[in-house]
Amino acid sequence: MSDGDVLEGPVMRNVGIDGLLVSFGDRLSEPANRAAMAFRDALEREGPEGIEETSTSLVSTYLRFDPVHADHGAMRRRLEEMLTARNWFEATLPGSRRLWRIPTVFGTALAPQLDEAAAAAGMDPEAAIRSIAGARVRVQTIGFAPGQPYLGQLPPDWDIPRQTQLTEKVPAGALGLAIRQMVLFSVPTPTGWRHVGQTAFPLFRPATDAPFVLRPGDEVRFDPVSPETLERMKGDADGGAVSEILT
Image 1 (cartoon, rainbow, N blue to C red):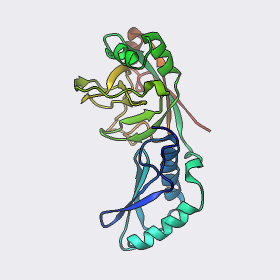
Image 2: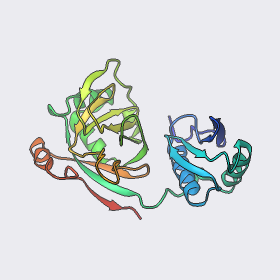
Image 3: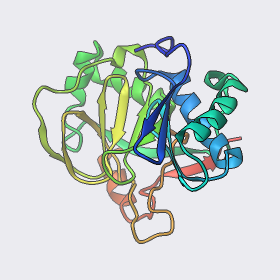
Image 4: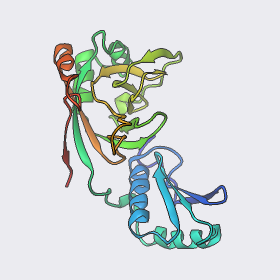
């Protein structure tokens, strides 16, 4: 899994009678993830008439269109013109992104698998905390559960596998780690990702106008705090997290 592991060019596939999927890689890489986000942003701003919905996964952009306006062939031709107009692997990321700093307890009884993950990465727990807290990671996609971000990539030392057995349940706000990525869990869930940190950050807010707090392209840093500090932050609407707009 390296930044060079991308396809020679974007690959377009039909999805049902009214969808297209443009893939910029066959596995996760920074350039492919960047390209998927930038292409979706361009579709939203300047895409052909008839597009009704867009979304991104780790390395692909999906769009759903109104078949009354165009069939697959016509929409493909319009997208191919956009794809050949620039190098999407070097495109600028969308604007209005935010940098979030999220208070996090690493280890302790709140995040009991830090030591295990650190050992798998060849580090002691203190070095592991410095490495994770020192990384500025991108929200690569939202998925699996409402508002749940996949974050990365971490340094190569963190290319460790998921567990062979599931953890029965981690709480909302848990930070899981595997394969150079992190997942911040939006709801309590079973998982194979090692639970290395715990936050009080509410990711899924169904009663608000913006139920998903983090968006693809946002960046995140996890700032170490004590369990006592995190407990006090639970009364804050953002669990102590703060953000700023990236320019």
